[in-house]
Image 1: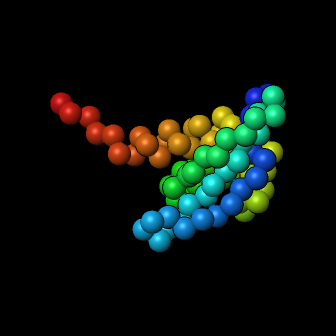
Image 2: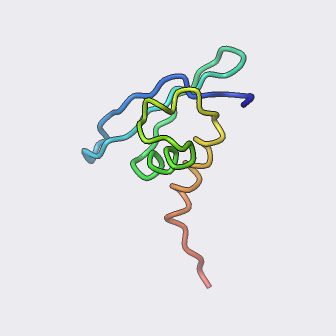
Image 3: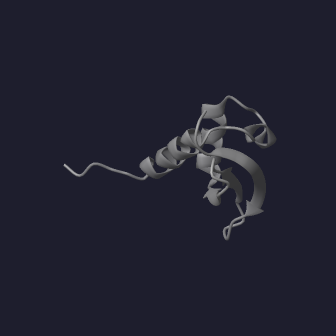
Amino acid sequence: MSGAVIQHIQVAAAHDGVAELIVTLQFENGGRSLVTLDDYATHRLMELSGVEKAEALVGTGWEHVRDALAASSARYMTENI
């Protein structure tokens, strides 16, 4: 995959005591970004990536992180008719 990839992952405690995953994205130009994923997004990322352990996410393309965040956000959307 081109673009950014997951370089490092870290589990952290959120303010509500639920675990979050902090993902370090490494860009082709050497830049890095930290992205925090809630429990829902973490599970979705692992499903999209086909892995069972968070450590196996290293090397995964940023597109899966984007899609996991979108899925996490979309779960709160309701259509007002």
